[in-house]
Length: 447
Image (tube, rainbow, N blue to C red; front, side, top):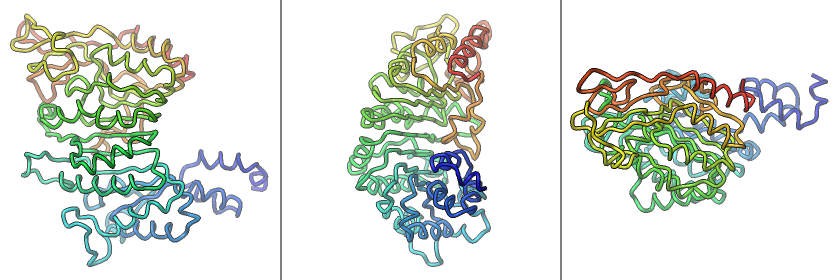
């Protein structure tokens, strides 16, 4: 211990930075010096939730300015253990059945009856200005969501609830004297706010951030997944995602993560060609489909700055067949009739993963870290991986697919289904693909 205490403070801070939260708490108790240094690391993150135990803990931080000064990141959790216990693990909060699972004190009045969030939740949100080093805010919703036309579908957090939370939380964040540099929204429903006040506050907030994480929740039809990409909401949201969420942040953005609970890119259409991030260092995509070289070119256009690239369950679509050719990423003129398909428009895509990897190796000169494959956290607690892109298992995982309209349980599948002469063949990763991936990883020192 004496040897440890003799180390420079910079080294002790480094030790704490590599330790997990449990080890940090234990190490902090070893001496006064470690307690002082460890406070910064133990109290980096705080959480506001409707849970009583969390309410008391958060109030204790507010009551001690030295602790509040250590907080750099705050999670705003709108989910309670009664709804879903994903956030209430032994490491951070109480489990179901303990005292902390109550929604406030008995008789606690709710701020808005429609929201089912107690007053103390919003009282604490309104005090975010008391954290002088606050840099990051994470707003978390429940992954299940309904549609405007599905009032029969009983969900934990309906559209009015989500809209009210967005209205109140964005107003507080936009009014902070020192606005956060990172905004993350977990399970953001695929409906953009329309209230002009909300839009103004959100645009103001986005204009100053350096990091944006959007994990997008879409209404899912269990057992009938072919319906998921046909809902009107997805075809309104994804084509407007770039203009609404990304363009306001373009000048300053250094980190961008976009995950979706359904495939997006080709259909529903997500087109990034209209926006460029001159400072972008990190890009992470989950469930994004590649079907046109313009998507690769867009990534390569950030070669001057890009240092990290994460592609999680992002397939190349080597064939597509669709009835409505006017709602895809491809130009309608690129989709033609096919002799083996009736009533559908067809296109093929000849670029392969070895072309992508070779381009990354040659045209992203500042790339330091690359992960491509499948994150093991997909669908844990029925949601997409959140803040987990660095855990992607590198390798090939359904990385070539087709889009075959009219079939289920998903139009995204391994091979084309033709109306005549049987089915098409799946496309497996080639040796050239595998070699190109190894060469890219070797160049980055990841082998």
